[in-house]
Structure formats: structure tokens, C-alpha cells
Image (cartoon, rainbow, N blue to C red; front, side):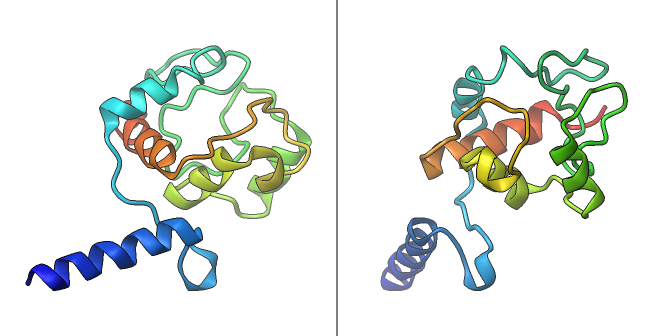
Length: 137
């Protein structure tokens, strides 16, 4: 049993380090929402998470999971973000992690000035936080 658990953890870690699964899907271990709240402090100058909260420089993120990119009513998205949504981009764990890792590569010519999160732990933690903080209410 112990060997099996160690091997499973080693395989999971290898997937995280390599950046994904076959087909390019990103595999991140479960994150810690409290740690993600600390990572999100980098985002609060531009984004809010509260239900009914106003958008700032960036859109309000409440209800972001499952939302088509570039479609929050009343926010002035870049043409690139609107095109990503028109092309079928929907925000989920994988697409948010890809975008937060390298925003300018994930959606070239988008307006977000953030350079990205380099650490897989930060990505996993911010995803956990966003799931809690942005659950549509």
C-alpha cells in the first residue's frame, strides 16, 4: 500500500512538473484556498469577487467558472478576449490556470497587464480560492 501511494504521488508530481497529461491538459494538485487568498492579493487592484460587485480595471470574477471568456455584461473586454470567447473558450480549471500562467501567450493581445504565475502551487491555490470566492450566488 505504501509503495502504491508513493508511486501515485510521484506520478502526480511528474505530471505537474512536466506541465500536463497527454493531449496537453494541465494537471495540478488540489490547492489550498487560504493560501490562494494570499496569492489573489496580486489581483485585487483590478478584480473583485463579490456577487454583484463592480468591475474595476479587470472584470468582476464572481461566477467566472463556466462563463464564456469576454462575456461579462458591462465590462469593456479587448477584441482578443471577445474573440477567445467567440472561439469557444470557457473558464474552467484548465483554461484559468493556462491564462494565469502566461496571459499574453494564452490569449495574445489581451489587455491584462499581469505577467503570470510561475509556480504550480500558486496556480493550484488560486484556483481553490477562486472556486470558493467566486461561486455564483
